[in-house]
Image 1 (tube, rainbow, N blue to C red):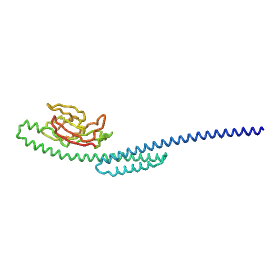
Image 2: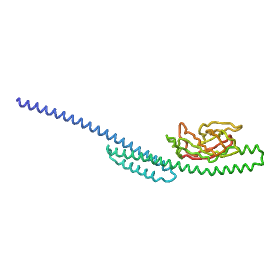
Image 3: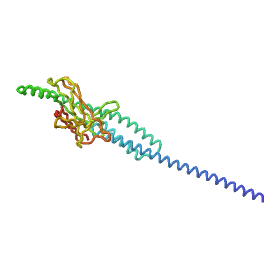
Image 4: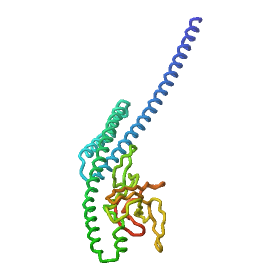
Length: 295
């Protein structure tokens, strides 16, 4: 009888231990499953972030390729490498090792992009400089024209000759959008969204009949919506009112003088896409006009 009671007690103790072990095992199994689910969720989110970063990098390359007047094979090849990495990432496993490998490849592509885009901006700047240097011929033609005109008016009254021939003249007027780096370096761009400023450059032509000293010209930049950019101040000349973007002030010494002025982007928005009109006035007289376009 006593042996039977001991056997029953031992059985109960054994079942109790088994129940405790089962409950502990079930608890840790549930905890491990939850941790696995959470880790997989984190890996999926990390994978999405890497894919978004690659997409943004691809868009930067697409924009740079579209802006390049000459087909840049280095940019195209780099863009294809990004696409290949994106395609591979889409079908990759969600593992820590795999994701870290893709992150390292992304960082290497980021370094490569910084180098390629900087070089591409430099080449665009050089092309812009070569284009503007052609205006030197226009400067020489303007000097000849002014000299010829001075001979043709010799038979007019002296006061009229002096007034007309001594007026300031500008040539080579160009406007463009520019990207301004933190270093102060400026890169021309045709993209409205990338333009930090509008740059207006012109040459005040040599005129020995103009009295040397401090001079000023009124620069007017009109955007595609017919708004006058910049300060948009007004000045009255008898019966005429002029809205101008800025006043270009300089010291004139009877020789060709190259001048560049800038208009900052709007406080609440970027520059508009479309065609811009640039005008330069000497008092109320329009002395130069030009157009450019931002895409």
